[in-house]
Length: 331
Image (cartoon, rainbow, N blue to C red; front, side):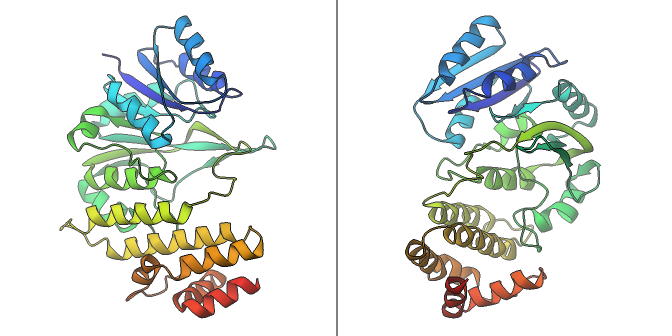
């Protein structure tokens, strides 16, 4: 059994995939398996994966029909045999000692997962460290309840909490299996949000390697973070519904306000996307969001969070739907 399985979803990344895999093959922790999941990529990515597999026995390749990022990660999880599991996006790469450092801490601290910081690499070539606003070190269950639960799904600043992206984490496979943790295939975007919420809720412990940018996150043109996503509002409503189905049933903490903040956050996100469209399309899209039952429920018994004044004003206007619609359409 390898010490670490690294799952890499592959889709339309023929320009980047070799760079990514090379950083994994050169890891100082050599006892790893690299699972490349070709998610029906229409370019040469799948062929490149097969060539790399032929050159190194640590590489496994899965070819499947296109199902999205969650589906690809789940396919990798199904065949992963490592003691610990990590995820890497195929247009990124990692420090050569990333998994040795993370595995060593995971074993020494006996935690369910380890999380590092990461380096943000811009198109301009500028690189900077992205860190989290929590303390470094080990978190036991008591500390998780006290410091992580209050921002597990969404923080009062109307932004994600510290547990979000999976690609700078290393998870104990036994922990994931125990709680049947996998990616929601009905959620096509921001899938890390729902996965990490469940991970954070179930975890008895984790360790945060603050200040160590072991993962390299590239700003590549044409990614889902830089393009308009048609149908995004319905996807986010589905995610919020699935979060409700789980967190409405838990008895040890009240996540109701965070679920409301989560819905309001994605309403702002989608309205921002709609405003980049031609005015007629934008009007229809914004009207659909502001008149939705999901947003109406989120604003029920909802107090506006302490956010910057401009955003606070917009939230008040959204809460009163007609005024908000007129305001947004005049911008």
